[in-house]
Image (spheres, rainbow, N blue to C red):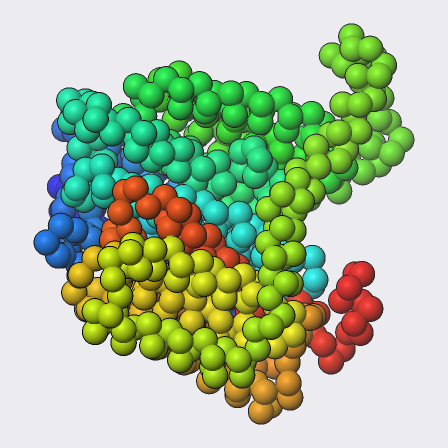
Length: 621
């Protein structure tokens, strides 16, 4: 039966492809396609799980397609079905089916009706890949799809400033989680020296044998997994993104940030539990983070004036408790808690508009506060301090800006010497010269030892400037492309591996880069020079260019539509286990290039249209 597992990926894939070719004004066919696809998925999921239980609920592992293989590395698709997958599969199928039924009427005559259902099916495809994944590589495919579908649904009302701004914010946090997964895969490659599957992690002797001699590497992998799970599930210090994600339509808020997407971090922790269960320090850290998150977000939820923000912070608090349960080894309880929280938050979000409407009169004229609350037992000074901190959401946004994004922006603004002419006339010839000298073996051993970090740092400088660029669109785009080329050149100094591995990585980068550059020049021809100091909102005027440019952006960020997705992992496998500085530099480059590219897309095609809105409204609305 395990050979039938890919059918749960094939069904939403077929539904998504069909929905793409339907006319955007034919609501009946669009909704029927989504509703029918998810209905079939739900029916088969129920029958499959019932049959699986009747066989004694065995663990089914399916080793599928090998996408890349060399002497010491394999990238393959692998699927696993066990009790964790079964719960996530059923909960996801039921809730997505119900939300799709609700959306058929909620979004009636909405201009983005087709776009919503396209993105919802794409999200469910990524969700299915994630929960059925049997190894980290397969999980990362679905993980990336969840991230981009979140960006598209938060910015669903793309003609408005705030949804687009918040979509970029959420994507920035997701990007940190993405790099956490990449670093975990990199360290796992050096720890296991093979493509390890989740089912192999259940072999306690195998895990203990490898961790005994590589305890530091084991702790590093666990921390990277925790980083990714925390970013995806909005645990501290990343909690502030979830309420901002509520800018999308209510159905997408329900299915994404109330039930499924926000619990994927929980899924990652459950799936990797056998790896870190004997690392007591990691379990204490997870429990402490979950407890602090639950306490702080409960207080924030109690002072929110928006019902959706209140539900969001309440959900974060419950997920914090789920993290505590996982750290204590209560996996079955955590799964039950996940299902209950997912159903409750979906229901709350779907009925919230009606509840607010029906009870608005009672809210104004019949509201009576409780006579006594828990806080009344605190001294007045502490009460007032906690109240103000919760009103300010504990300055979580400000902390992220002050200690992460603002230093990067400050550093990028110091690089104004980089221009298109200097980049092409000076830096590109230097990189070409280094490549020629490397191939001619002109570098001695000392230079070969330090060149990876030197070139990696230069690549980081390029993408840092691209991230902070506010004027030249062409410069920002070219800098990202050259950053990838510089990274490939830097890591080529580490080992004498086959040149085709570099081309696997760069093929998608170069193709997507050229397509994106052609789209930019086409826009320049139609609209004149476009700068990045404001939103232009050109998606309605140039929908075809917007679609092509979005695909180019995805290709340039390593999304799984080009060989670059595999190439990134292959390239990372050639960073040695003692080169943490190089791994950190390359990881930061990957974070910034993704943010830079999606910021470019948002600035050009999203937000208020520059022809109908003044610069004043863009800045302050």
